[in-house]
Length: 260
Ligand code: NAD
Image 1 (cartoon, rainbow, N blue to C red):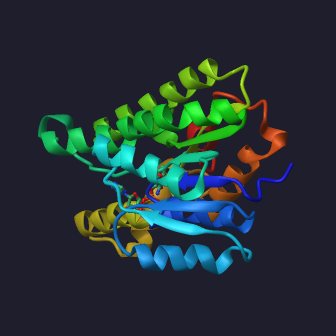
Image 2: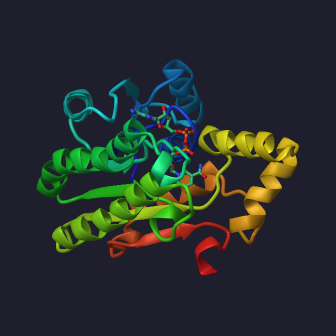
């Protein structure tokens, strides 16, 4: 069975991994509801550019830290497309600081956007998926959903929480046509990581290129960044019938990061 004609909501899809996943799904003929901050027009154009004729692309600017806006996002997706078959919980932010210096508002924002938003979208999308007896929930966690790094307490807590929630909801849906899985990328060179590269270059007096090498060398044995395209193609696979019995998995795409 092809996924052409299905409807996907990808949170945080104006940039980086979310945009890559939206493009991969669109290439398969999936209709898309995009979300995120920044240049929404450019994101819609980038998705439309790779989609076959007939694929519909819409956008909703919900702030994923706000439950009422998330409710409106899911309601609008259903109103616009009539269904919601594939939910990709991808929106996320990062802040790096030791815990005793961690700004309280950054902790709250990371937990809200990286973890709690997936609770809201999932609880709102699942009833329809179960009724239609088909659905896919893909939670974009992280290698930091499986192992930790210093100075990332909020992010590691949120991503471990997201992996835990993935397992729980996968069990709740185990006998249905809805599967729930997590994707755990290592380093992907998106704006979220570029900020960390730039901070490292500044702190250690390195060139940006050397800062990238240092980042990879520390954690990612392949010494290669994972790409949004690779994650997009994994998302397509997880939506296929071949993946119908992959449930509650946390699939690391991390150049060997968590194998160490
Ligand atoms: P990115 O900064 O390129 O994209 C983040 C997206 O989330 C953007 O579209 C942004 O507008 C959106 N967003 C941020 N706050 C939002 C809010 N309050 N409401 C709605 N949208 C919001 O980052 P990315 O690297 O593509 O990250 C995407 C996901 O992948 C995140 O959950 C991140 O934790 C995860 N991840 C990234 C990496 C990496 O190396 N880049 C590794 C593992 C996991």
